[in-house]
Image (cartoon, rainbow, N blue to C red; front, side, top):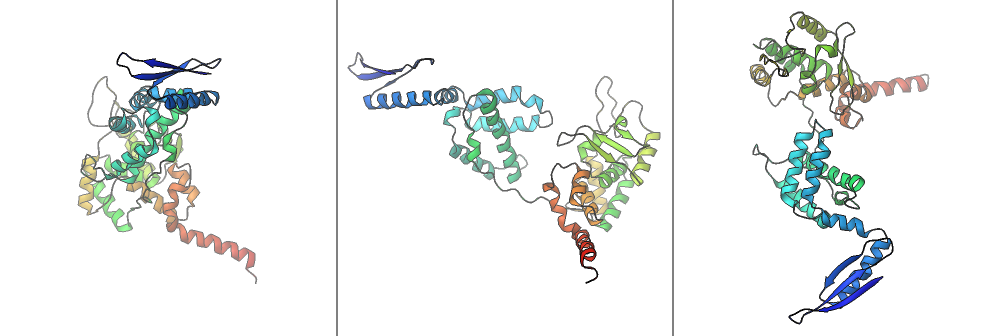
Length: 359
């Protein structure tokens, strides 16, 4: 039940003090200059309390986006070590832009305004920010809001649900031609760094990511069975990788001269006692090898695309490619579908031959 009290200040100004009392709920009060505003607030507040909406809205008014970001970085991101650094930077950007707003005042239109600011922005490298990067910024904020809804009870719903994401490109598919592959492998073999050639062969033959290769230890590799187990992968699941043929022989040779001060397959040359051994930095040897081989517009990650492309051109299905690369869904490997069209055609032809062969 609402009670409205008329008040008169020392300057002769009139105000209206409203109190809403409902059994089982704390008293809610507010002051207005106009009686009509006081009555409307009393009616809306009483209705919201009965409908279970009022206190959720009040929580949203008591907390700012800056507080949400700070709590999320402190309590949630430590459970996501692989993305902690990047997402911290992304969330700090949102905090700098709209951190002063209360959660109740953050609307989809406000987020859209700053989404567009991201799209138009320039990176620290002086390049336009890609749609994929903007999507990552939005995803970080979206999960923070979702946590505030589901676990903290700070807001009733996330404003991110009504904000559309920029459309990402279909994804780069750059793979080595046969001639480029021969030139690159020859150049890597001639490198002064003995690890470059086996690392590149390993990437080409397995489709492993750079980080997965650099994190490999001898405990992860079974040379007798021809396999390696990846414990730290992008999707968070352990994955077994087949090691066979030329790369298996290379690793067997490498095992004969392995370092005794490190368990990594490809350790750095630095020996720092009482500190974790770091993997070798192949950035300069890699770039020099590309220059010697006269290969342009090619990144280390494109070795993974090359492996997937070779699998597709040699008859592997999209499901098989996804399993080799460690993708949970087929969406990421659909970019290689056109390379396996010949295999698909053979499958369809075989099916038709069995059904209609004699007709």
